[in-house]
Length: 154
Image 1 (spheres, helix red, strand yellow):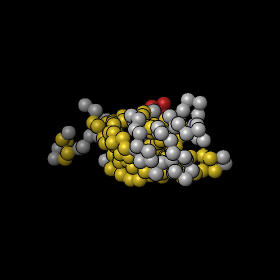
Image 2: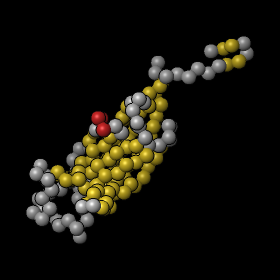
Image 3: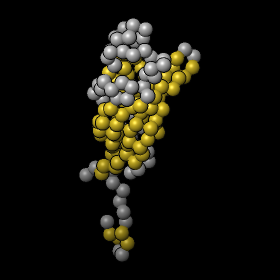
């Protein structure tokens, strides 16, 4: 918009998307605390808001599964969108000393990762923790990258 000799920038309405790349995990199911099993598949469940959970495909790369999956998540600006929540789940452990839950799914670890600033990218190796009795226990790392992008609404 032009007013006389001055330009006035009009702020457009926009959406914000999270571009997420979940690469791999390291050091899951430490052999000193988890006996070897014939089958261990892993999946990552992740969300910014609990009503909008997503998941990777399952990978059987114990103790270092690789998903190499990318996704785009549209963020709802009316909700609290400050963190990415990540849980790594183990499926089908066949070890009798560590049967998991009745459905064969066990939580390996979780992380709460701050989202980057708008138009900034962040990548890293984030520690996973889980509750064990009355304490938290570190259990491996997840490697991922993310970027918040502004999408102009036309």
